[in-house]
Length: 291
Image (cartoon, rainbow, N blue to C red):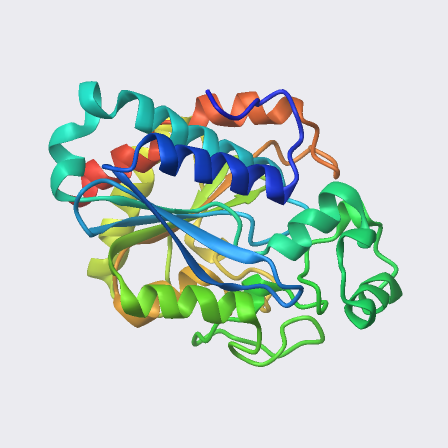
């Protein structure tokens, strides 16, 4: 495996692994930039498979949730290694999109501190929020990317910004509009649970969501959150799954990895456990979408 799950990795290290995978498996893996963060980091997407239609695996929306990006890249590497023996039928006709880190500025802050931000004004503003760097979840402009998407439950707050005001949310929006996607899983931490209910959508839509969440709960051992927990604080709208589900009316789940009791910074030891829990989720999600 090209990425060591027993180590913490910088964003550049993650990019390096993604590029190596592309070089090693050019016939099945395509890598593209979908945009740049406010501090100039490339936001990369990898398409695994020979088809161009498939689900999206999204990670690293919150900087401090640094376990999932590494795990997603490790899963990508595993699928590349096993492609011919296990996944060839589905991935010859379809694909899986991986966007391991949507918020690379926030990720690098949470890994190495505010010095990771090269823009002086942005760095000073991040520091002025008086949040310890290892607990920082916003982007380089102090915006919570997972509150910045247009949706029915969007609420403007200090950290939400205006809808699609941020490079990172715009990058994901443009990606979704330009590619043929089948569904979305946005990986977050903490809670070891799956959010599936969408109050703005039909009973038919939510019945399918319940089915898919149940299948993935069986794989991971994670619990399924109750419908009323979708936006329990009243300001959790404006997230990626709300935007995706309401815009495209395709399946969209949030999977919370790592135990609710985990403290930030999330320990490196969680990476191996999360990998074992979710390693089959992307391919199984594709299988169930095709049924």
